[in-house]
Amino acid sequence: MHTPPSFRGVRLAATLLAAGFTTLGVHAADYKLVDLGVFKLPAAIDDRTDVAVNTPRGPRLIRNGRWHRLAFSGMARAINEHGDIAGDNGALPMLWPRGEEGRQLSLPDGAIFGRAFGVNDARTVVGLFEISDDETSAASNGHPTTGRSTSASWPREATAKPPT
Image (cartoon, rainbow, N blue to C red; front, side):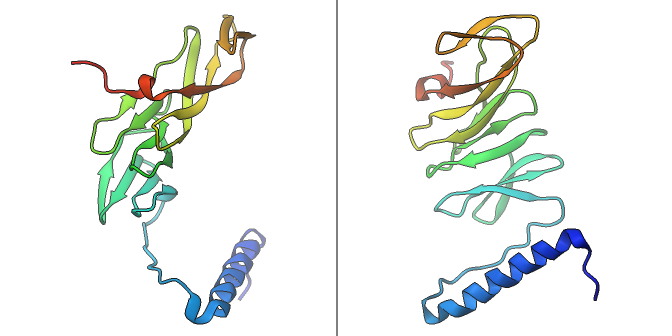
């Protein structure tokens, strides 16, 4: 069977991975292979096996074998040990705290979009935002930033549920 060039490395990696598992013998950990389906890309997993998954119809969470929609568009990128998920809604950074509605994270004045890439167990979110080309803003540690991406950190206070 002829394997297209773009798939040769993948097949080789899968073969090497399988060979590695067979050499572990009795010390190998038990695992279960789960088929997520077509066009579903796992992004992150926590120790409880909650899985953040990206689909063409937005980010999802698999918890206890059940699928949960996080948003209608965007991407999930990280999950902490509490099950909080960081990502975006396609334009703005988001945090989906475990068991709560998603929260849009604020951007500084002049920012046109942002992304969240990580969240720690203290619920501090890290990511980036971009300032528009026609504005200047002291966006990162007091350094002016124009028309480029800048790293960002949203501390726990900034990700807290707004008062009702």
